[in-house]
Amino acid sequence: MLSHARVNCCASVSLFEVMSSGMHVGYSFDVVYTSWLSRAIETAWLVLAEIDCLWTPIHKSWRLNERMYGALTGLSKKKTRAQYGDVQFKLWRRSYNTKPPPVRAPPLAGALTCISYTADGRPC
Image (cartoon, rainbow, N blue to C red; front, side, top):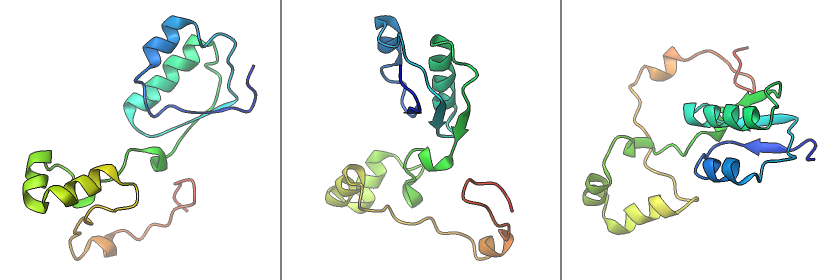
């Protein structure tokens, strides 16, 4: 048995393989950490249901969401490669250290967001 284990349910690529192979037998979790993406939450539910641990608390955080692509969000790979070049395109796609171009916010956007948040994302 695993105790105090942390499971990051951000990918469900091999979920079917794990469940059908019996590799999950004997596992138990005290807490689950996942992103706010629907598929990640659903994966956590499926895993917990399969190991009969539906009582396990699930903590969701936007910090576990997929990478933010900034101004590249919504652009196709083809358009991005044509606009910025193949070298820069590959750098953004394959690097963890190179940030994409920032999203340009309207001038009043900062003035409209005056709510403070705690470290776990709750309003103060």
